[in-house]
Length: 583
Image (tube, rainbow, N blue to C red; front, side):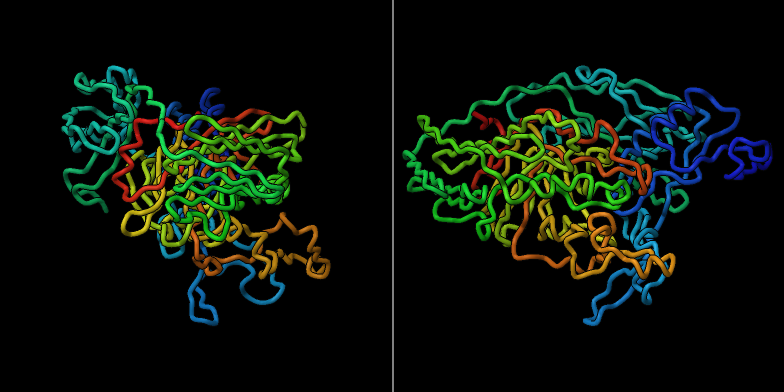
């Protein structure tokens, strides 16, 4: 066959040499590969990249790498098709359908569905695409012996053409780096063993092997030294942590009709039973929560474009309502020798109960443990997220974290990000999607600090791992329905549609004419700490839901915890790594 012909609408007919479906799922691709086909399969459009998307691309490519009849596909689309516009104050933003004329036919921001912004700034998802498409694969064989299978995915290049380096890390510290000289032919694999005999399990230490493949000679568009492939594998060497104990002055716990206080000369903690919110957290006279917006349950995220496409804002609306106006069922205070525990039971209309226990330590450390009990109400929908949120003063905007980065990542889009130590300003963790939506999340986080420039602030230590957002805006700022200053994205396909606009039916169904120019930094840093946030999805943006395994079913029990620790500088973090705080 000298010149293959592709005709999409022909499907399996005789007049096309390829089958080019649109928007297959991972299961659909696997089925095509497993059953086999009489011609190559290459989706002409798939992995719809609208807004915060491109979830489960790795799962789709597991089938593509496995079956020879699957030969890749074309992600839709490359670039957000927004047009640069200036508002009356001279501020620039990207406009989309509905921004031009009155009652004009429009698909709203639907054409902003690329992997890069209109100015070609990469979406965070492009990092995932690079990883998934990379031509060198790394797969664990036996990590206790550091046996790893390396696969040359190239079809015409030997891996000897490239520099392949591995590094062994203890947390974020490089212990050893060496070159691997592999003469590996195209489409061949080899198992290598990395020398780790000298590694010893230590309390508070994780070991990783990082791989990096770089060009040795220039290629088309690619300079020497460019990273063409990378990966990270965590070694199974760890030791149980010590229980954290500290002595200090005794606490006095007082329960009034509305406020519960726990105090000592060093620490002051208060909880408002009426609002269901921690109203104050002071250590050495310093208040950490901005304007009384302390720790509170949070089950809602600002819907992304895929959420709107599958009806999530309306279908999951109950979780938005449960993230405010809390129903406190009971409050219990318990004293132990050196700590005080306050347990709050929140009763949810979904049939769930969320018990949050605060353990206050004499030195000001505050452990937060959440027990979320399953519901027996069958129709209760999945949760967008399971966590808490609170607001810190705006000057605590220096963020350092040990987790996946540097770009945002989600449970269905994280392969391209490595666990490491990253630093950022809170405002730089924000990504300006053309239509504002959920952004800036980081999973597999062991700890993070939020500090002033001099290093004073808070350490957030996960019992296991957490996901977090730390932004200069609230969840509501990114929630399209809350942008009530803007009209909805009406389609205006007919005179009847224009005449019969129904605001009530549009609520939580249609997106509003929300733009990046609406996002202005607030006078706080809002921190969302999550056990989990559901995946962003990405098979399509008009019906596909977040895939099973990447959701948070409400009919299951969940338990997780983290600890707030006041610090004077970020170097103090290492002092707490060997300890667990959960009672």
